[in-house]
Image (tube, rainbow, N blue to C red; front, side, top):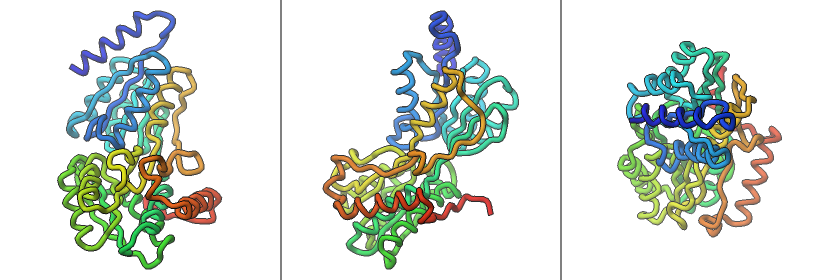
Length: 326
């Protein structure tokens, strides 16, 4: 059905004539789906922004299992997408394989790197913004104990954890940081029940703030925090609105910007292959402060985190990137 949907989208674009001189873009979402209210939804928001601004429909595919990755990307490339945006590091191998098969098709890979002349790779300095929400946790905790629930146990997620731990200890050197990973397969990003269990375990040990870097699994963490009257920190999208009053903040990762830019650049003819790295300086990552968490973040907390942000950008504070080559 999704293949037919793309064919219809492509046919409509071509029939539109000169106003749409090129084929529509395409995006393939990772496990968890475009409405995970986290990583994938940020990508969806970027694609929707492109559609709203240009009036151009995009093709999409929601991966349900690993076997669909390569097939979906190949189908989108074969049908002539102006750019195929693959969301998530799990797509690295598939993009590398298919990009070699279709050297004249543009591919944008989010969250990993493929070094090919027709691939644009977009990665983020998640550790920098994780440091800032770690500071918030360290400043907000009353027990002196905070937690972290990760999704799949891989270097990328440990990058979130390390930044969070360093930020918490920067704010409060004596703080104790608990850490649990949900699993070792991509399914770890789509298990809210397990996320809730892990969060409750950390609350039982005394944690009163827990940061989830786990995609849809984090939804269980946030619910557990609400139920226990503790605090949680969201990830990727601004999730403060999910449970106002118990969401201390959210670590923002501008996947929406990466997807939008890839699509608009392909349309305008400015798309370029290579690697883009987005951190605090580039406003590719950050933290969320809005009406939903304003009462939880004091002026002093905001001031300290803002000063740390500027110090990281200036290089006065060095946050460890556990994925950096040594």
